[in-house]
Image 1 (tube, rainbow, N blue to C red):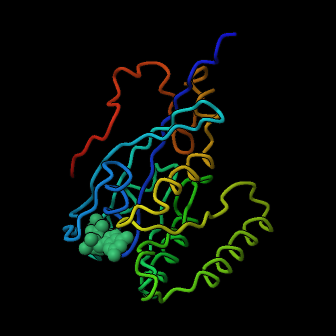
Image 2: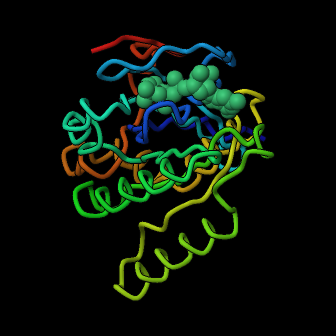
Amino acid sequence: MSEAAERFAQFKLVLLGESAVGKSSIVHRFVKNTFDNMRESTIGAAFLTQSVHLAESNTTVKFEIWDTAGQERYKSLAPMYYRNANAALCVYDITSRSSFSKAQDWIKELKKQAPEGIVICLVGNKVDLKDEREVDEQEVAEYVEELNQEQSSAGAPAGKVILAECSAKSGDGVLETFNVIARALPVEDAVGGARNRQLRNKRSSGVDLSRGRQQQQSQAASSCC
Ligand SMILES: Nc1nc2c(ncn2[C@@H]2O[C@H](COP(=O)(O)OP(=O)(O)OP(=O)(O)O)[C@@H](O)[C@H]2O)c(=O)[nH]1
Ligand SMILES: [Mg+2]
């Protein structure tokens, strides 16, 4: 019996959140499986790529990751990164209430300005510091449930916010978070889209990599702008 061919899809993902919540640390854990206690604050944004494999659909999902700078002075650059994004991680630090309200602001902004159908994941980082927790899990769950109910009652079929917690330091929950996002993305559309490339709406769906995969870098690539 012949096995079905592996499929490839590519999506743009952006990380948003207050400075020092651990956006770059999450990305580096995901892409390089490393952690730096003294990571420097991001300037502008950084670009990296990494793939996950979804066994159930035999699909490799490649993420093009834009890790934005959380410092206030870079805020005006953010729309440049989220306006074409398929997915967004709004990151907060579970030991910082202010970072949670900042993540909520990002979600509001994305709901207004980002492409329709963008997959939004609200991520609480630094769960290794649970003794210093300031943001209650239950409160976050209720906030997300409320948001998703508003979404449903507005008749929007997609766009539910996903909830996750992780620790870039220990690695707990990081890969799981990206796997959940990959599963929530319109993989079928992206794969099928190759047969109908001209009709694809670039703002809301991914890119099929089945053709020209050799032109793509298979592992992490990193650059800055
Ligand atoms: N204990 C703990 N520290 C973390 C974790 N993730 C990141 N940090 C630390 O938090 C600090 C900030 O991490 P970054 O990844 O640079 O934060 P950022 O959100 O990218 O910050 P900007 O680039 O300024 O927006 C660094 O000192 C990290 O070592 C974590 O999961 N646990
Ligand atoms: Mg950073």
